[in-house]
Image 1: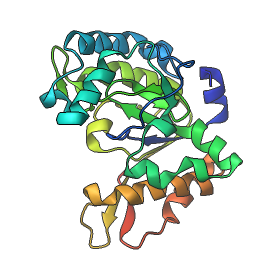
Image 2: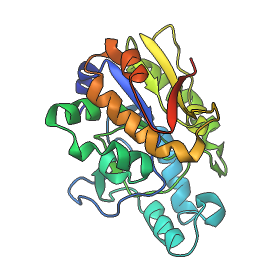
Image 3: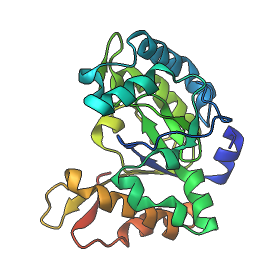
Length: 251
């Protein structure tokens, strides 16, 4: 999906994190390049710097990647050979709890089109990708400290802010990100139609944290199915129901 198509189809954007767990393999005919995907042209230079450094450090170590043993071996191998590697669409690559409960594959054709045109993933390696963009196998958290770049959320901030503000101009944005991903950009609310920063709290008022991941996936699915136009964004948030968690609109 090209940049122009992405902007025309979607006046609503839903921001989601990637998953630490990722599906292996992919299509060898859709090889990954820094310029791949909706935001590739804008973020290629930054992606290139990260890819070059990952290759230099042989994919990274246990401290950088946060895994060990077989998981570390897979991550090092993937991170060392990113250019030209097989790809899967982002919604197929990401396999964590949020994405399992979003379950794009089981949506109707119309709902799936809406999901693929509206969901944007904020990624430590890629900056930003749409749910339909080709994504390689990789491991690099937005909250990682990666020399010589430092904290990746801070390193990404200016370029990612510029890119997202251009892409989201005039649109409604629903932000379901953890704080470490939200720290990687600042949206200019004067340029947006509306901006909802959304969290999930337990009914006692306590922040949901890790336990709320399944509910976050269900919420994203609820938005995709119920929010048929951008004007229904607030209504879709208020109508979400979960046995344990409630939606908290932070701003």
